[in-house]
Length: 120
Image (cartoon, rainbow, N blue to C red; front, side, top):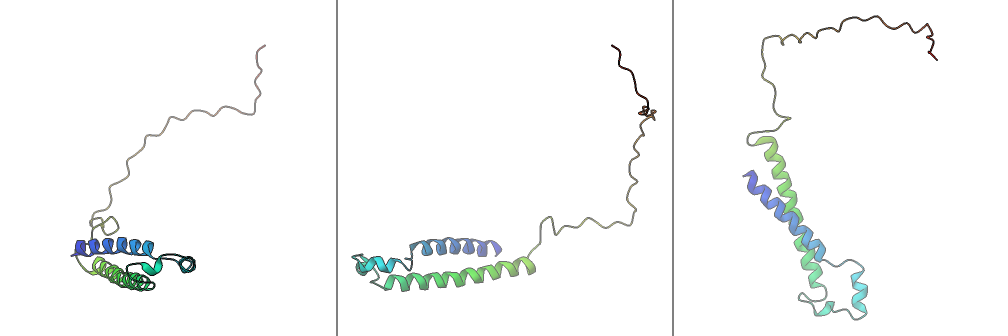
């Protein structure tokens, strides 16, 4: 079920992108006044704007509903998988001791107070 909702969600998202790119901006009406062919379009002078804006609004509502459906499904339905949902198995044993690291042999620190002569 989640896969079906996800596929519809992605298809609606791409459809919204396409419809928004097809719509004319607010400044496109000024160009139509100076000889643009907007009045001879398929939907008429204002029909395309109404059709495209209504279709965009309907697809936006479907997108919103599929978003809510995916959110509900992820929190209530199905098996939750992922790195954040997995927990380590609970055990009553104490954790194993840390491995011992062999210590380095102690070497005397060089005496920094004395100055050494450099041979010539």
